[in-house]
Image (cartoon, rainbow, N blue to C red):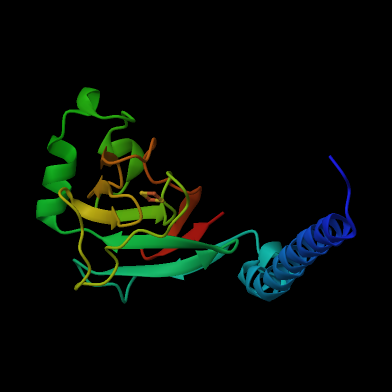
Length: 182
Ligand code: FES
């Protein structure tokens, strides 16, 4: 095979195109990284928030059937004032049939108050169920729409890919209406 000038030009042209393609790809990746970084940075809790090892919450304004979300160490914490029906349902479940067996009494020492880290144990999305208009899944608790994990009224995983129950954070009662999380 004879190498012609045309062939050489063709080969160089190919190399240049490859280079341009690679260079564009790298620039694009850097551009994306720069664009995403401020977003990630914003999502990281500020140092002063991280330093707050505990969060105190007054439960008295939360009426029965209502949930609120507070922030503890940069994570959402769900606090639900459960109804009598929800408590009866959660306490009536057969623990041994659960994917992550835990009794309701272990998770909610004072049955009317359920306190949970609001982070799905599958990939870390924040499940729906805090607003009265939210879907609450097949077991009436919380529903993570990312991949369809259903949690019951004790925050225990019942269906979908999540491997574990919603975590109960460490907390204690300071008196009848106040808790300290952390
Ligand atoms: S993150 Fe919740 S189901 Fe995937």
